[in-house]
Length: 265
Image (tube, rainbow, N blue to C red; front, side, top):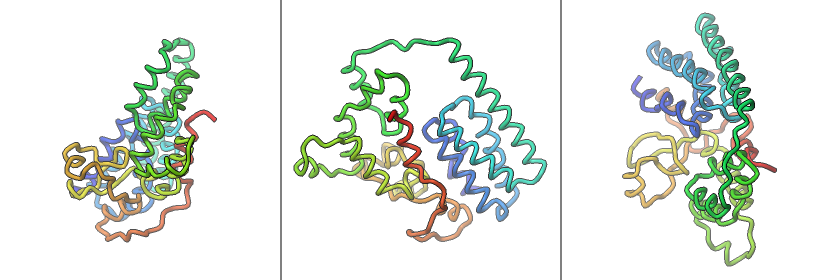
């Protein structure tokens, strides 16, 4: 039970950025480990599964809906009849609430105050990659501001620290460069699981821009990226099985493609 509690799946479900990751992790745990876990851990997993469906209307993003649908498939395939029926009812109620909220927002037709582009860009400079892409969907003005090249250069330097590219190439599209580098380097681990191992916490954590969310750990590590781990490695940790670094993942569509589809074309 302690290992599952240490993963803090339930806490992650209440956070917009982590909700899709947590749902995907729950789905993998159901598919790969549920039948081998003790009853008390199964009870916690079921509790978090119900919470995932109940919280869906509050999260209300396309990534969250996709992750919840994936979790539902695992529920239908794995859980015993009584628990499965309870979870399906929660999911259906969440979808009804989601539709009502969406309709309510459309009827209100709220106009977002227009801010000058330089102020928007300054505000957006404090956001991470996922938040930048989500902001691009809010309005045309926000979308235009999120395409400011300096925002993406900062993100590129933060994640990859390869400023040598500036000398090689002028006029580089940093958003496109970050997209390609992100997908090439991290599609099988960081962007898919949202997890990393922090040697200072000595635990598996939800990463924040590939770093530990604990500020003390960031200071101790010199803000270096975490050792990234896959969802399969998280499942193996839960089962007490030693994982190899090159362990293969499922053939599901990698998360990076879905992440980058959030922004306008």
